[in-house]
Length: 358
Image (cartoon, rainbow, N blue to C red; front, side):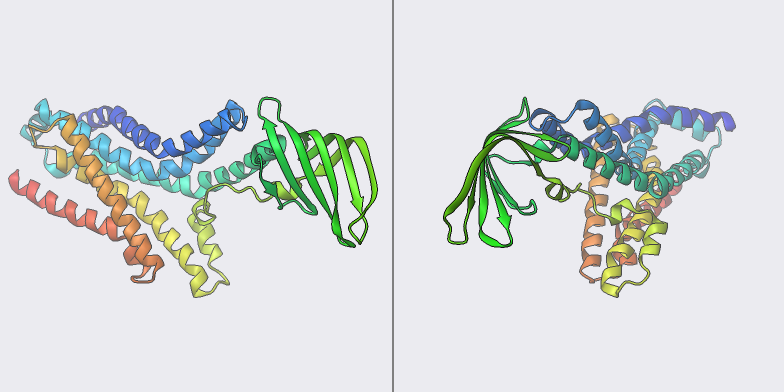
């Protein structure tokens, strides 16, 4: 029997890898498009883009592994059915429960791996993503500055840039208003060009005008080079990932301490989500076998269709559960687990029907 188990697991390997890769790519499309824009328009290096993607990958994998495992299982057992290998297994005296045994064992290993991702890898990836984002920001600050837009976020400065040459990262026709707490009229600076170094704007060939309290010019002059610090502006740059999504379950539990019931709700929802999604792997693996085995007319197309339909419904009910939990319509341990409960009831129903057929 161990030979049969090894054969099933060996045949399952490539379809599962394909399924995980497919769903991961679908989830990554929006991020990839955004990062491609950064390469073309904002001048971020391809190496940094690849590193950013690698840090985005673990949170996505924690969601796509159950989906890919479900699709891979369906593809494998659909092929077993179409080639009559499933029939041969039955004729050897293998019960449905026995056929499910290696799938269940593998799904437990996969579930443990997802928990490992959530507890160890994802929090570290989030930290690395922040560090890399800050480094990119300070090494290439020009990509955050917009043409023909007045920037007021820089402490004591308002900056207007007429145009930016993205190839050289140099600005043309730069206007700067430097505020003075002692005078309601700011110092006015105009530079023909500017560039960036170490989160500073370096002005070249600039003129300045200083005004009296009456608004009259009291001092004017020019200089070849002046440095304007922009670090306060770059500190507003944030990555698109919620803090709770970057935490492991143990960190979320620790974060509950000292918070009001209102503040605790997002943490409780995220804890339930981080438990429900990995555990869905076990249910989906069984359901994938039950949907595929015994249907001689079903092929890869049918398996794709069924798997995408089930995954779509799972995501829909998961999000509905999260929304109604956030609105306090139902407790999180009911709302977030709604999709898993539906999957479990469906799996039990299909299993009983399959056992009756055999």
